[in-house]
Image (cartoon, rainbow, N blue to C red; front, side):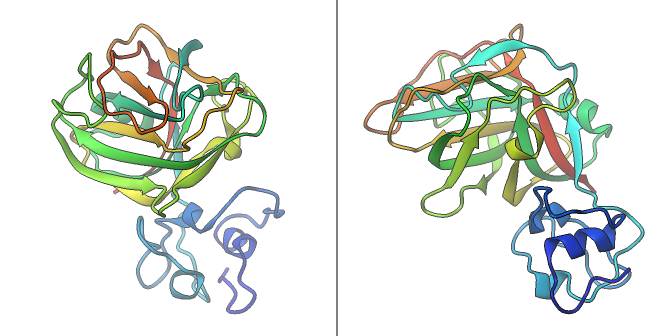
Length: 268
């Protein structure tokens, strides 16, 4: 089934690639189709700019479904990892998280395989429905170390980083994050509303650990913030820095715990 040449919509693209069952209510965007192949020509780019005219209009999809795989790091735990990914009690905050190569492989079912990380979803809880923060940025880096230093600095000095990519919030004002307090059953937390789909994919090399850095540059604080859930037994795997009036620059000790996470990952 070819994608139409006129009146091309997200629904028409989805229905051409998958079974024609999209009803217009699912949360999809052009980035949902990154990596899609066609019977001729190049696939939809895994990162960077994409457009309906260049990448979709009139093309016939290949045999594979949308390769926008969603993978969960198991086991899912229910310990409260507080103050993350943002600490709403302060005007500015930053959260840092390390996930190991072995954990990425366990979640995605791959070994030593590079790919493009296209989105993440944490296991949110305790947030006032509709809690909103603006001017957010997410960066991802390869990192050699398996733990964050404690105390550590928000510039991650002491860590061996490479390929740092601003994956979401590339505009000057960053992106706006809406939080929802709607706990989901195991394997289904967050739902489509909580997934943060990236504007630029992170090209994972299949060999290193990754550092996810969430920058909250809202510049104001508000009650109603919650937490993310995970496993508290992991030490030095997450940290938070927070400050009023200006962005944090001083060191802080690490927070206990490894947050639950889901990845959107396209393997090569």
